[in-house]
Image 1 (cartoon, one colour):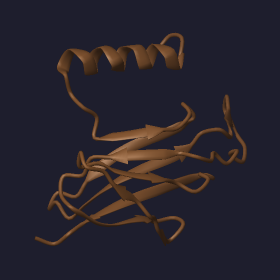
Image 2: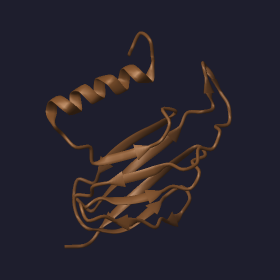
Image 3: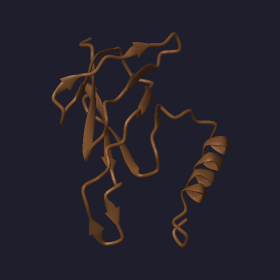
Image 4: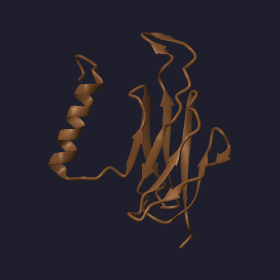
Length: 124
């Protein structure tokens, strides 16, 4: 992957690791490879967040305005019961659906440059 930079190589490697370890990903995001995704958790267990960065405006060393990416879906398995999901950059609450298997599902509004999805947990 380092030499070729092809997304297929990264997907193949991650798929092999997931299969060998038998781990289920807590955050499943349906987004094109141009969206960089990171997941972090609060050390006190009060919230978790996903950051999404749209790299569609990057061409070599040149940075242009990114093309908005619509229809990004997130399926997240929270560590605790979720009280609210908020988009920090858009400053809005996001509606989500609770599934029987413990996951929550949501669809983001179009991603322009970046967004942070904050999962706020219920108080104990």
